[in-house]
Picture 1: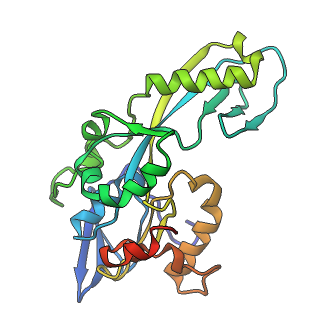
Picture 2 (picture 1 turned 180 degrees about the vertical axis):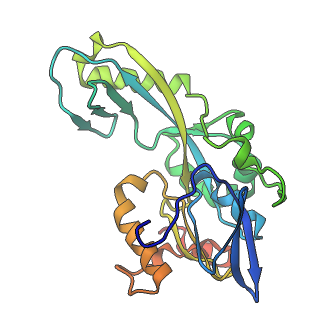
Length: 269
C-alpha cells in the first residue's frame, strides 16, 4: 500500500476482459480493474471460474470437519500430530481437532465432469474420503453453469463457504482424540464446523500462467497444504508475476499437466 497498491475486500471478481489476445482487465462487482496481469487464487471456486474462460482445471473440493473442545485443567501439549488425529491448543485454551485428509466428496456437476481423473486418488484414499451429500450443490461453488459479468454471480450469493459438518466425521475425530489424550474427556465440544479443501488429482497445486489466457496466472488446488507451503508458493507466484528468476522450478506445478493429452504421463506424480 505504501507503494501505491490498494486492497479491496468483499469485492467479488466476476471475470476478465481481453484485448489483443491477452488479459486486459478484471471485472469485479464494483467495476473493472485494468491490468495486463492477474493472479486467480480462488480456492474452491477456481475450477468454476476457469470454466467461464473455457479452461478445464480439475478440482474436487473435499468437505472436511473440525471440532473445538473447551479448555481442561491439565496442561496438555500445545500441538500433537499423529496419523490418526491432530490436536492443537489455541491461545484461549480451547483445543482444535481434525483428521488430516479425511472428509466427504459431495457429488456435483464438476465432480462428475472430472471423475475419471480423480478415480485413482479416491481409490488410494478410500479409508478417508467418503461420498457426501447435497452440500456441494447447495453452495454452488462446483457449478458447470456460465454466469454473466453484469449480474451477481454465485460467488456473491455465497461469499463464505460454510457447509455443514459431517456428524459421523465429528464423532470419529472426537473418539480418536480421547483415545490419544484421555485428559480431554473432561472437555465439552464447544462447536464444530466444516470447510472445503480444493484438491487436484495429484494433490499438487496448479501454479502458472494459463496458455489459453495470457496474463492470467492460476494459483489454486493446494489440496490442504496451503498453510504449510504458502510462503514458498507466494514467492514463486510473485516471481512469475514480476518476471524474476523463479525461486524454484515451476514446471511441476504447471496447470497444463492436467490437459487430457498429458494426464496419462503425470497420473503417478
